[in-house]
Length: 610
Image (tube, rainbow, N blue to C red; front, side, top):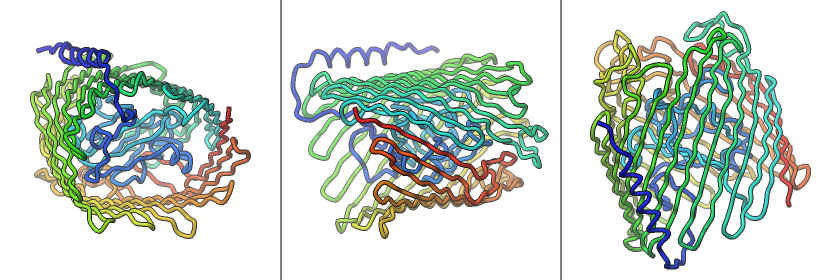
């Protein structure tokens, strides 16, 4: 049965007509900032969150989204080689398709594979990345079992007009050039950026192993990426704010066989939002957007397959301030997934309608969070999820919290309908999530410790005929520790994650570790600035992992050390230099695929004051 687009479109029109007809004035200023953890502009001690800001990206001299996320508490990264190669993100030991990814509030990712091509996203176009750990299906629906990653494109300048020119060059004939301009006045703001990046790459395939790559192809695997972003907004009154955003990236990625074997890709995100303060206690936010993921694969010089997917999303959210520090949110979400491919699928489109509610309350030192959501999906039926959290602040420095949440993940189009592979009888994967935490904020720094357990049932796995079936379950237990401080003028920030992700299915694999998750990950960033010069180092360590569910293919752990330096030549001109993997460690995160050894990268950034 096909569902009409009339309900969400009617909500959009009704909301907008209400907005433009209102005449009242307000005291508070509406903010375009999105707080992903609660879908409101109120921070919560009940949600474990890390924010990677633009200042962090530039200070740490990060050069890819993968590099920015690697070592973040609760996050495991695997890559099939160097720059631009397939990258998977595992949050808190869940599957790589158990992570919901948003760009400026718009759902992204392939409807066929269920994952996001992080390797194609240009970090130069990104303002900040919010990493929200823990189940969020009660707010966002399918996919958010392990957590949510929300990527925000670059926003307007603090004031006036600010151009930015950046040129970078490094090992493997890698270079990057970007140009941008940002501006802001009392009512309007904009940011426009364009980037080109290219690398000759290195041989991604380990010639000594033959796990999924052509080991006899000792060639460079290059990467080429063109990208651009636009974000602009206008405040029509103290009540009404409208914002538009767009991100586009396209290029190609070579795999073994050189230019004869490559993937041509493009990703596009277009969206916008309207924020309106209807009364002193009622805020209305309407968002709409579409993301497109395209891939065209060439083998031996001939294009063999193409996969184009589109995700259209619309939401309307009402936030009611019931009393001071008490908020009730009511909302509606619509999502449409569509596949256009050279491969013929039995079904190529499905719709999802959802309603959600959330209450946030703070009573002196106590905080309460309650939420629930109902999803109706055209393909796999109805699902209800909910969450509850409680927190307590004591001794003016400490917070303790406890929460419980349910979540689910809808099967992908590949799992359901891929010819000769899919199984239309699959049901959604479901989870129960338990978490407790304690944190402290002191004059000397901040720290937090979170313990969690995730029970997943109907986990989609492959039987002996390589057909996906709901035959597995898993139990994941873990702990995340974060801390930051200043010591003798040095800024220190560290993350430690301990993970035990176990399969609970019966048979030979009972009790085995889930594949491609390192049980221990650690990251330490140290920085110091003296006048116009700064220097820093990043130490990353990951324990061993297994590349298969039977735990027969062991991938060794590793330690890497990066060094960086920065010098402000002029007030507007900055020179940066970075040595990655100075220990020249030869390591892998996926069996058979190399990671980069010692390499250099230099950046010159010019930000004139006009």
